[in-house]
Length: 376
Image (cartoon, rainbow, N blue to C red):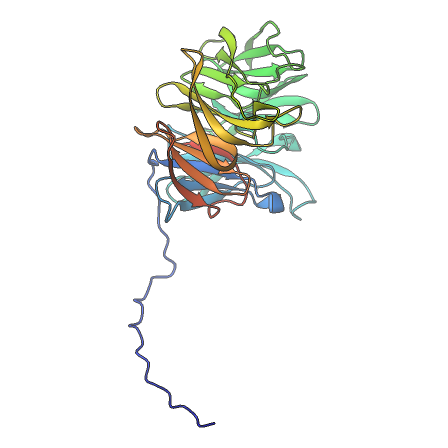
């Protein structure tokens, strides 16, 4: 066989030189179209992340991330340019002396700018719930859930970077900021206990509600949707309940009501997923719904989002999803978007008012998007 002559190939112009390193910074105040995605990263839990995501940019949604290690939690401050992660570290990844910390991250550079060591090695290690790590006192303090298995809350002064103290909570769990400087917690007997803190972070006053959580028949999902200072909880069987957290003590307002039902369900429509309820768009509630609801289906995810007007106590819309959703959130834009994290890692974006599918961010920003936090 005769060798074929090589044809001259035109080569493209060389790319311009880039400065190395070339690091971009983000705005100190994030746009309202951005959200914080907690990537739990089940395949490598020591390498969880808090991912900054632009929901309006399907081509380039990933803006950056911070580490949120070992069953961590993340908080986004609206009053200053900081993110906070509550995390646990071991010097040999899974063994050695345990250290619990709150890491302070700069929003613009996503660099760690400090940390607060939490004493005792007792920070609660669970799949991430928003209500195990919360602000109080106008975002000046953070509250961290502990589990040894005795339950308690550590009070941390974020401004002065120090631990103020620990509050024992026998039989009670989860944190719901209440009043100016306090929080409410769920207790095993179905009551809610509210605690007012003094200027030093110690308990100044406590009050306990009547039993209002029917754990056997209408257990509530632990992450509510907030409308103002009212926390809207949805139960496993589709009841909505409103808890006013604006004063020193939590109190139920109005009567619980059913979210409704619909045909073509086997056996019935029930809420399902992880972060199953969100708020926005003129005070409406959005609930992730599963048509195959049954005992134990509350973590299975949902195929529709139902929109409820709590003032009318009525469902006003149904939004069919592109896949099985696990967590939902609404952006705080003038024209809000409904963001849905699916079980396959894909994040989809819908128009929150019309319900129309806008675009998909794909599975490119997180391995396991567990919770979604709107930027406010």
